[in-house]
Amino acid sequence: MADLLVTGATIIPVDAARRVIYDGAMAITEGRITAIGPRDEVEARHDAPQVIDAKGKVMLPGLIDVHAHAGHGLIKTMGMEQANHWERICGEVYTTGSTPAFWYAEARLAALERLRFGVTCGVSLLGGGDTIMRTDSPEYAAAHMQGVAEIGTRDVMAVGPTRAPHPLSYATWQADGRATHHPVSFEQQRATCEEVLSRWHGANAGRLSVALIYPVLRDEHECNMAPRDYEDACRQARIIRALAREAGVVFTQDGHWRGSVRRAHDLGLLGPDTLLSHAIDLHEDEILLCADSDTRIAHNPSAIASVMGRCPAVELIEAGATVALGSDATAPDRSADMFRHMQQAMHYHRRHFRDAGILPPGKTLEMATIDGATALGLADQIGSLEVGKKADAILIDMQRPHLYPLNMEPFRVVYFANGNDVDTVLIDGEVLLSDGMPTRVETGAVLAEAQAEADAMIDRIGARDMLGVPPGFWGQARYDGGTV
Figure 1: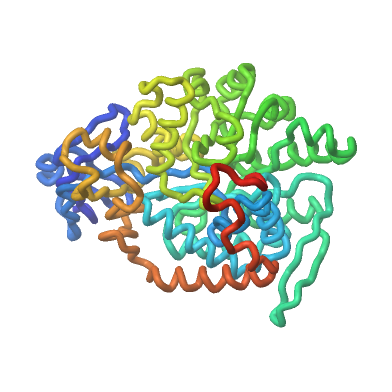
Figure 2: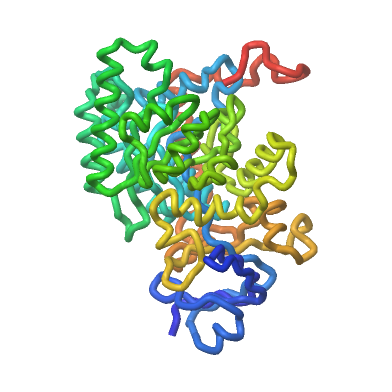
């Protein structure tokens, strides 16, 4: 006796055989897949007290987002196209302008967005920019994890110290609305990371996990930092990398480009448990370094970094590296909708090569499912729909004008679907989204709380002037003041 049967769907399991199962079914027992195949065969062997009629829907593995930022969900477009004020706001909010309530509300909002879009697992850096993490105290990570746990999605929260030099000034907020500023050392941030690892890695029945991060070291850092500060940064990167190996967790970095992979190699940071984000304008030897070391790449085709340079994702894949898709969400100008990012990835690289055959939709779907699982060291658990794996699956409602007529579904869902077409989401066999509605929380309450915390944050940092429409928004082809 199974716990749940899903019947009648066209199933694209992204399994080893890369099958497409028309009129298929999947049986789930104790959170894992116990059968998947043609409906008549599965139904002949399995009964269940709960049955989901999925006729007219397409079933996929839950989508995986290997790079995004906690905190961004309550900032989104603030300061966007206003002389790089976006980066300044991020730095201020993530060090002095946020409270645990901010991180809790943002986590619930971002996790709900992911759930609504069929993203069952995602990386969330606890902060933004390429260096500012909220690791002065474990309470901020705890608030994030508690918020995600209430929604029910899988989350890989990345925590780590800021780039040297230290100390960096952080602030905590008192009940009377006053801020207390305090210096934070590398040692304090490292202790925070260790406590967060101990408390949260593997929590919530394994749906929550922790990764470690140290900021990327690029040419400008060696050139512009005092020699002692740069030496400290290299030493600290090795310490955090070693801690990740000792704990058996992913080590990630945000913002690789033009020689920084070579530096990471020289520092001993690469390997199959390393995930490098963006990786734009890599040199040929860096592509080979990634492939030879089995280092994994988080490609964010919709990110501003992909405007400033190009991730050689196709070349990396052809060299043998694992390249997975990230949203870099949810701000300043992009969402957590992985369908959007799959479509962006195809057009991005096809335009570069001037070849419409680059990144076939099947490979692009792999990048958002099984390749994402591989990048996170979870391919034995999630990323495809196979017997024995955790039952993380989504149903796409094909009864939509933009998805009709019903044929060539593997093409149709990648080229035409969007996150709002997701009807049902299962994680560990638990139905977390049904008929497009979350089952654990009330959407209005999550939104109201997010609004209140965003308003409080804006007032704390005095950023009301960042909410208007800037000069140049209308009537001209480019902003005079530059863009982020």
